[in-house]
Image 1 (cartoon, rainbow, N blue to C red):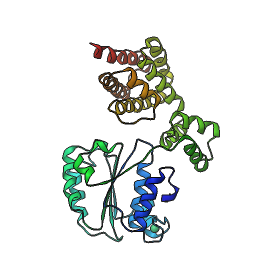
Image 2: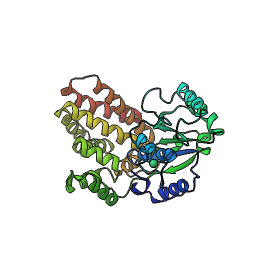
Image 3: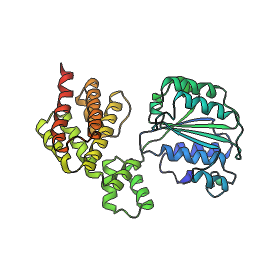
Image 4: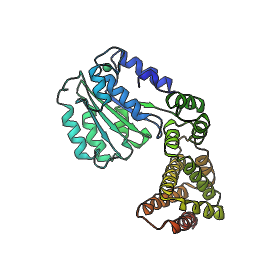
Length: 325
Ligand SMILES: [Zn+2]
């Protein structure tokens, strides 16, 4: 994918295009946006632009771009915060010393630090040392769901580019053109339940997880409105199959994380998260989120599925009651 093929977010894309053609791309780039907005895709396009030897960077056809597209360019290093240890202090120190070594073959060296949401302060501080005086031909490209999750000192030394989900029509048109194998009706349903978030919509379409996402949404609403009978009834549907239960808990966990983000004042497109913050206190939302994350872990322990739904209902109910006291 080239920069001009990126869906929506025209301001950010135009700004980056200009920086690339005038050779003024910032050395520390921070891309923020909720899951599914294309942060990693954009980070990869920028990384290719930094090593590209063709015109109209990234050209996606020169040997450098091709290597990058196959994840085998020696001057692009990728660390993913979702994999344990890849953004630890030691890992950051290795990145730091590597940054001072000349590129192998490209004009520049690129370090992609993806999913920095859980990057701890000591790692960020270790990273600061190289951000303060970055070597001339080195680019750092970070992705995070909200720039506020990083230290002010890291933010102030980076240029922040924020991605927003496209509107539903843009999302629909994009998925229809790139994935003709899905029916218009399925795409439209997925786009609606993901509020235009392309990554989430594709997840729903690919994993048949649409039903799971809808059930997760109903469970969360039953919880928000204190409908205990509905909660029990909905949760017994988890017994359908283990993969289905996993899918529902994944969606539920994302939804509750979205409620937590909304409860600390971050903008949200989720109607359910908006309902949550209007009905529940921040403490209650945090407790619910805590219970859901625990319940997800319990499911991973091969618990007996026929009891799980009932158990989950009581745990979720309890998370609201405790915080009332
Ligand atoms: Zn190229």
